[in-house]
Structures are given as structure tokens and as C-alpha cells.
Length: 552
Ligand code: SF4
Image 1: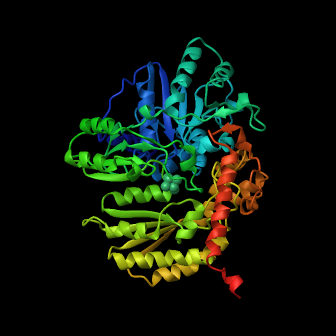
Image 2 (image 1 turned 90 degrees about the vertical axis):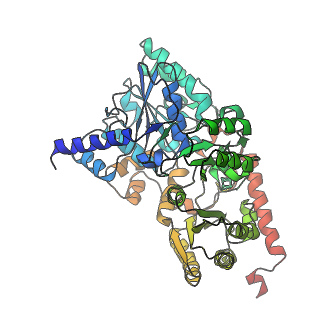
Image 3 (image 1 turned 135 degrees about the horizontal axis):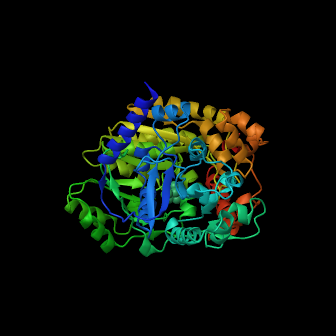
């Protein structure tokens, strides 16, 4: 295919996607300040993210501000752009990314880091902030992972929004706009932006031994309740509207970064939700979003009201923990799927890791499966702290009990436990991929004996990389640059002077990390206490029953 016809083809694809979009909420989206909301996700996945849609609406409705979206292109287009050195372009007008005043990267997963940098590099934007000194666009990052630990991206990003964007984004936009209009230089603008609450500016605050505290920002209960502004059949969930019913999580699973980072738990009021539902196009499927949508105190009323308004209701996680969960959420939408995430095989380990879900509740979810349910899905983690042989055996036994309850085909999804920042298990080791594979074997064999069970396993090797990115410091930046040269992860980390096995070693509880300068609204006192509670719960579970080695 000639270079010209390829360019036409990808431009036609972009236009076709645009034509298929239906605007559910309108924003002025006019002004001289040109921003791009970029994501390392592909179009269909990004449009299924309510957080991405919310930030897009916020940017495009801000006074004198125009916002365009940018996504990671599909494989064929990516290779074409790479081969012919064609810059990434915005989805809305097809202009090169670099020709804007500000790029805000929405980062929801650690594996986005590499592709985010690839987007910058291929768009002709110098990667390191110091190499862009004085030039536009200003590069900002926001999202769950960079809120917890911005250090791996610190050398590349001009400013991070720590926490939720609602309270922080407006002041950032106003500061950049007004100083930019006065002709102020980038360093002066960043100095001012650094004074705003919840904003971390590495060139101003420093990267190691940051001498100040940056307070995480969160929206008030009145400000939540966002809904999708664009609906498209090209969304991975199909033509659907998304409605946030709660933010944060009422549970406190000790391994879950979203559970901690999005504290406190806030529910959108029933009356406001009903108003939003009234404004949605009738007969359009509706996805109720939250970390745990059924936990909303008026959940039954919300579903009842939506169904009365002729919406087919489905549930979605606001911030799926990993790619696999997001993909499954998209796959699960059309055939009705009963989804439960016990995470651990036994009730006793669930208590230890803070997951309040009994075996009976898991089985009950299948007992109460709707008549049109077509399959079931169970999520487990392998390598959780305090995990024993009986917990792994418990996975097989629990699936057996579910099988006795239902004839539905079952998918068992297993992913490795990855210790993440700002969780009670941030000092815990990850189990080596080799050991995880050994631990998986008996589970695999046990599940094979149960009819109509499909096993789906996330890559343990990927989990190891994620562990290194999630808890890494600014030295990870060098590894990311090495990756962009086409090197494997082991070599990239090696060239950056990082020993990749450090994540397999336990750290002393309370040990300081590079990201300690962030104030999450809770501190290590709480996290170490939670860890101690896990230790006590683990001791208790073996008191009643002697451990196998004690029996000998
Ligand atoms: S794992 Fe789920 S239930 Fe537990 S804290 Fe996280 S979002 Fe909440």
C-alpha cells in the first residue's frame, strides 16, 4: 500500500469512528487554549472508561478551552506510523499531538507507561522534561497509578495531578492559560502550578528526597456521579451509557490499591441518579459503575428505576485492577455473566487479606443467577501473602461447590498478586513467576476434572514487570527509555542498574519508599496496623487446626 493511500485509509477510519459517535452531553469545546486528552489505551477501551470520559467533558467544558482526544492506534496503523515516522494524531481533528498547548495523559495502569512514552516519542515530543525546557505542549499526567507513585514517570512529565481531577484540574488550566497569555516562560508557569494543591511538579519539588508534602485531592460527594458524554458502537462495551453511582470502595481489601487510593467511599444520591437516568436516551443499555456497584445503599432502587425507564442494566467496575479484568468486563457485557471475585480459595485467607466474602456468598451468587445467565466467572489471585497449600486447593474445592450449584459454563481467571504502593501489603514480596507456575499446576489439574470449566491465567511474567513498575523509583525511567530502543525488559532494567529480583524479597514493615512525600489522607501507621491485623488473622486461622508440619 502506498504511503498516501495508507494515510487516507487511517484518516477515513478515524472519521468513520467519529461519525458513529453519539453525543450524550454537550460541551462548548471552544477556545484558544488547545488541549489533548491522551491515553495509551485503544479507542474502544478508552471509551469504556468513565474516568477518561469524565476528564474529556471537564476539559472541553472549561472556559476558553478546547479539548481533543488521542488514543493508541490499532496495530496496523501503529506500525505504519512507526515505519514512516508519521506522528500520532488526535482523534477529533487529526492534528499532530505535538501541536497543542497541553497534553494530559490519563494513566490507569502501569503497563501504560511504555506506550505513553512511545506516543510522545513518535509525535516528536522530547521525552525528558529537561529536554523540552521552554517549549509547548506542557505534559501532565493523572490517574490511579501516578497518584500512588509518580516517580517512574517523573523525568518525563511536567506536572502530576495527585488524586481525583475534579478539584485539581480547573486551577491548573486557569494558571497555565493566564500565565501563558501573559507570555510567561514554561519554568515560571510550572513554578506557579507547583503551588496548587495536589500538584506534583518534579522540576520544582525534586525527584529524590522531595522536601514537601503533596496532598491527594478527592471530589466531594456532590461532585461525583459522572456519566458518559459519548456513546459509540465502537466502544468495547458496545453502544452503552455509563453512570457512576459511587466512588471509592466500602470494603478494605488489604491488597487493593484502588480501595485505598479512592478513599473515602462516597455514594451518589438516589434523586441525582434518577435525574441522570431520566436524561439518558430511552432503551439504551446502562452500565452502573463503581468499585463495587451493588454496595450502593439504594442499589435495588437504582436498578428498578433504570429498568422502569426501559434500560437494560449491567454492572461495571470503575477502575478495573488489570487489563484482563477490563477485557473480561467488555466480553461479559453481551452474554449475561455471573461474576464473583473471591480472590482467595478459602474463607480464612480471605479474612487475612481483608476480602469479606464467604464461600456461601460466592455460591449464593450462582444460586440466584438470573434465568438468562449464560456463564459464570470467578476471579482468584495466586501468590497472596500468607497463602498456603490448602488455600490453593480451596480454589478447586470452591469451584467444585459452585459446579454443584449451577450448570453454567464457568471461567476461572487467575492472576498473580502484585504488591502495590499505599496498600497494607506494599512491603510484601511477590512470588517468583517460576514458583507461581508450580503452584498453578495442581490447580490446573484439579479444575480439569470439573466439567465445563475454562481456566484463564494472566501472565506471571507480566505481573513481575508490573511489580517493578508499580513500586519503582525514578531509576525506572531509564529502563523505560531502554525499552523504547527495542530491548527486552531484563536488559532494560539491567541497563538502568535495577536488580529485578528485589520485588521477591520481603521488606521491613514501615520501611520508607520514594513516594512517601505524598499525603494520601492516611499514613504508614494505618498500613502497618492493617498488616499486623493480617498477621494476627493468619495466626488465628491455624489455632483451631494444627498446621500440617505440626501434625507430623
Ligand atoms: S478488591 Fe474490590 S471489594 Fe476489595 S477494596 Fe478493591 S474494589 Fe473494593
